[in-house]
Length: 574
Image (cartoon, rainbow, N blue to C red):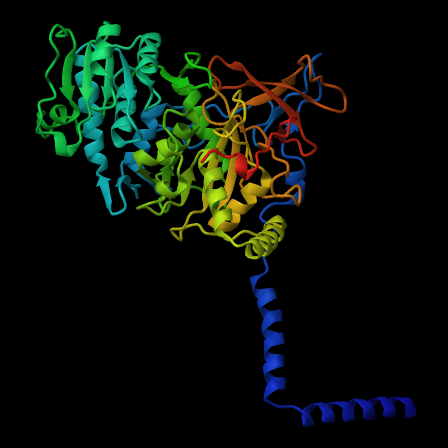
């Protein structure tokens, strides 16, 4: 008992001594300690994604053909079940029945219908997104959806009535480009989207190869006289005129060129009856829509690839991107989507269609897509989701590093990288702040100052400074959307060096599968799978395509490059 009494006496004396010395500073220190511990417990959250998912991001087939790797696919697309469409259910279709794959017409119908309540019959309009045009730093124009529907109908009817068949769209990112694309879908016209701001020879070459008879373009950027002289097959031209120039006579035709009928977009819309074109063509009895042709620009002159996609290719790509976003971060009406890359790029176009189908708001800034300038793209608008080129992101990254002092840069970057590597990123959904950046490397294009490959270090810096997640994809000429794409919650940093860290392009999306085929330099073995990337699936024009790009399957079953082509900031073109 004596030992217990001694212990109790010591404890009593200790407590008495402690509280005898208690003062204001002791209270402040104790309060701070308790507050820190409480805060850690209150704000603790589990990692966004289980590490096992990051360690095995693809599924592969059990067997492989000689000279090839196994077939790799997304875990969300089991064998034999690649994503082929939007699963559109027409009114009256039972809930348990499989829906249609759909096409671009169903995307615009979804834009008009809005977000439907669970018990809605389909006739009730739910919340819809907005479509905006950004002009400079202060002026933002909101376009009414009914007005765009009217333009779709009137332009489509006009072209069809004047015996148009293949329609070339030569415009910067704009509402008119989008409306013309949907007009072609609704009125049995073949759409050809030309890359904007090209030289005269390139434009004429693309028109000739695509065999177009109608062009929708803007004055000042389209070489009308040269095209008419060099390409006599042109029959119809529609000018999209700036509002400040509508008073001019745009219907004048140079001497001897009267076979070309010239109209303006504004005249077609304004001269039609007010009640005309307000209703879309009926769903019943509609014909399958015509194809969509895009051009894949290469670094070699006059060797640009022309690819013809079906609407099935595009809706498969859209469905794959819908499934790429986790359910908790799904694109919805609270998002503002900004395509800061050209809509003539299938990756940008597919993501724009995905945003429209998700009833997000979409903003068009025509200048930003051409300048590869992220700061210019974000001027005048606060998007939550942006599609940007690697060059724009690399330029912005280079500029930010110049602005940071050496010691501040070193401390802040290292600290924030450690934080990002843990897997805890701020949830910015619905706050009106940028939350997602989408970018892609083009397959078959040699990396260089104009087409940089982004390292994981650079991507981590972007996440830190912009407070947004980044999804990095690999795209190809014959694939609508992405071939492979990093996961939404994958923000790992593979090396401590910012400029020499590794990079990868994620696993295949749900609309394609990939295999790696032997080349003279790269061979597959039982331990290493590498070679030319072959992609198959419903999002691929023709069903299968060789990308002309060499890839290697990493230990986490994501697609990487065996070359390690990472550029330093000094190598990025200004």
